[in-house]
Every structure is written in structure tokens, then in C-alpha cells.
Length: 212
Image (cartoon, rainbow, N blue to C red; front, side, top):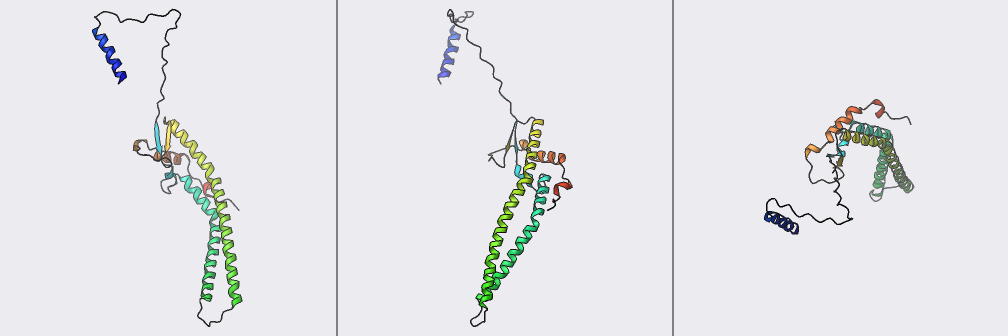
């Protein structure tokens, strides 16, 4: 409001000044420097885009290399997965046998030593399953990082090149940052996936399981 009043007063005073009368100029002070001219600052022009990286993993429309790496990873651990499942099946069978013996009708002869042996076997089998499952999970996580780390770096560099080639200064990952609204026109997800897949085709070497 005060700024508006100052402007209004300045306009009023100018209107009251007779035509042709120059405006009063401030008297220069001897030895004083002339006021510096304000420097012009160039404001950056930004072009923003949005991408949904979670769609990279779509099996049908995502980045093909991701799917091939997942297939390769699962193939490497399929044998171990089958082994653990077989142990779990055996443990369930033992548990069922023990349950039948323990719940047998009164008077049914039961070999207590055999029953205890089954109980001990089941307990040991459960420990083996837990240990093998934990080791398998750790190995899976480590191998997953080995396979996905280089691919993620490759995608990151490709995305940077994609953005620079199109004058994009900022890319927001909408899969990580909540957005209230984003126009479809700034969504580059499909365009980038198509561009990456065309330049990085999946080869047989990508899905080949290395020898043990």
C-alpha cells in the first residue's frame, strides 16, 4: 500500500508541473560517485519433465534389459529354490507323521524311540531350512546388486543423454516424489523406454547363466 501511495504522489506532482518544465534534478555532491547502474541478471530458462521409473520393470512394456536380468537372476537361483522347497515338503511330511503318532487312539502301540527320532529329525530339518534360506537370501541380494548395479548406471547415463538431447534441465521421478499434478505432455516415460530399448537390444549373452 505504501508503495502504491508513493507512485500515486509522483504521478500527481508530475501532472501539476507546467508543460515543458523539466523535473528537478538532484544536486550532485562534490566528490560523490555516480550511482551504479543495476546489473542485468539473466534468469535461467528451465524445461521440466516427469518420468515413472517403476514402469521400467513392466514385463511387457518396460525396459527389456531389466526383464532379461531378472530372468537370468531367477535362473541362477532356481536350483537352490527347488532344494529349499523339497526340504520344506519333507519337513511337512515329518510333521504330519508325528502328528498322527501323537494323536493316535488310546491303546495304539507306538514306538517311542522312533517317534522321538522323527521329532529330532524335524527340528534339525527346520534349522537347516532356516539357515539355507538365510544364506540363499543373502546370496540372492548380493547377486542382484551385481547384475542390476551396472544396468542402473547404464540407464542413468542414457537418461541424462536423452534429457540433454531434448533440452530438458530437470527430470522428476514421480515414482519417488509425490506429485499433485503433472500434464501428460511432460511425461517422458514411454518415450525414454522406447529410445533405450531401441539402442540397447537384449542379446543372448544377457540371459545366459554363467557356469557354476
